[in-house]
Length: 308
Ligand code: PAF
Image (cartoon, rainbow, N blue to C red; front, side, top):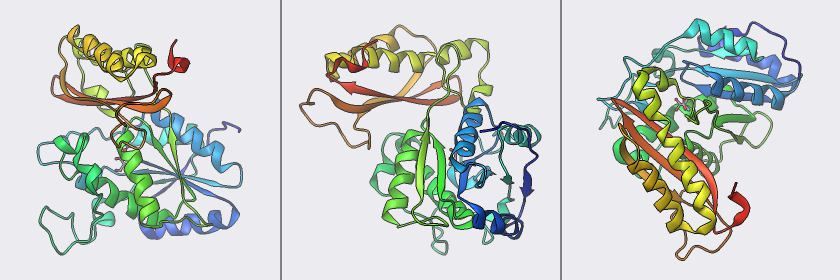
């Protein structure tokens, strides 16, 4: 694909978006990259993936919307970084055609539903939403799936690209698309997971990394080290992988663990015993200072394939 810099059209309203997309939809596939802005190199790689996927005839839409419904009352909605001019520049550099940046009123014309608001229709994510991230962030995935369903309804993408860093989100979105039979402009809607982009020391790129001060930035790399320790020992079995990961955690300072788990790729529990060669996902969440970080890594339990 060419990487010529383009200036994406900014659509602020549904009407703008529909007007922009109508001719593009006729010409090829529509590929959506949903984001909350504060874009970094991780997002850039997702937009590149989308551009490759859309080809010359298709259209790449990046949505930039900080979704209030997925933030808990004590979370960082107000201080979540908003960097629209830089976001637009990155989208242009990576070849996006349209940036959809609606207001809260445009996305929630009836107001943002509050807990116990029985008048509002929202997406019920099912039991996986109460595990892992959901244990400390009740209601988070209801907010994510509700806004993603809205974006799918507005953009009607054929392909949507999400980062694997938010792995539980990716699994739940795939499940929503399957269970609610959500389709795209030309048929099935395909959900593509983009690989996690990492700093040189392994820290997964995240919009929240900018909250970390010098010491915390160093401590934050622990999450990736823990996962890589698990990956390294996974050929010797689940217990070996978990022991190695916990050992790496004990050796670290400044990291307040929330969870460290190894599950099946669909986030169901692993079978017991685990047959050799079982694909799995190691997931970690921890606080460094006041910043909550997450990360995950694919591994294979009981096989030499992952050893390096
Ligand atoms: O991953 C994110 O940035 C958000 O959760 C998403 C998918 C854009 C929904 O607000």
